[in-house]
Length: 295
Image (cartoon, rainbow, N blue to C red; front, side, top):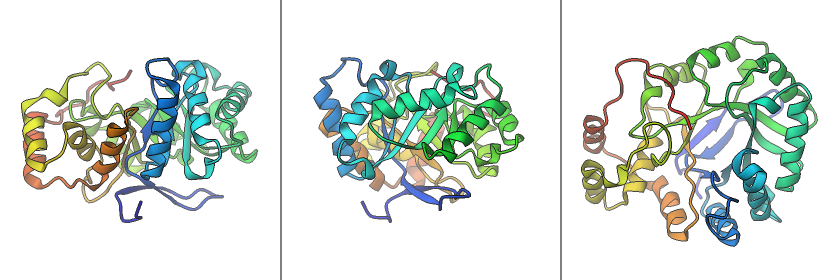
């Protein structure tokens, strides 16, 4: 994939240069659960890599590690092609338990390091302790960067105020056309922190505000007018530049080959002002702070 394709930049760290990532990656939630043949899940991830969707997101929670095993099989012999992300349970995010959890994930994934390791959601273990564990993992070379997931404004402000908290690379939250609550306060905060957003469930297939956007008449009409699928429209909307900045990496899951191909092709979709205006009218951004939509 050309470097001119839409991308999001992760800032440099004390030991790593800035990294450009395609604005669409690959999710693995529900993989490894038997919903689809394992060989199809493996093939889909490999197809995505071949099409330039090099970020793969997984978690120890998904299928109790089963998704990580699928990813490990997909990356056998091609680990260097992927930017690999996994997540730790909040109750495993202690000073020593996070290191042990990471090592279990690495074993399932068949690799010696993660490119990015996330705290899956806020928990009862003090953030200071989790940061200490993440720093140890970085020093040991087991993770390159760390981040968080499902953090709302207060949690993210608390993290940023801690020593080392400013090294947080991303916040991964639910975000799609029908769930725009983060736009009021959280996304502006992340912009001030220069922190990219990873959008899970960008196709509106999860969360409290789950809805069938694929069947919505405005979504269908705008997509038809552009000659694309509703899914491609939703992905193009999620990764659209805001105030001249592209700061969202969408991570849809796909198993069927045509869906993987459509997701990759969505990187080339440009939404004009008319399309964006019609979508904004049908799905307005909230004018006040709303609870973070989560799964």
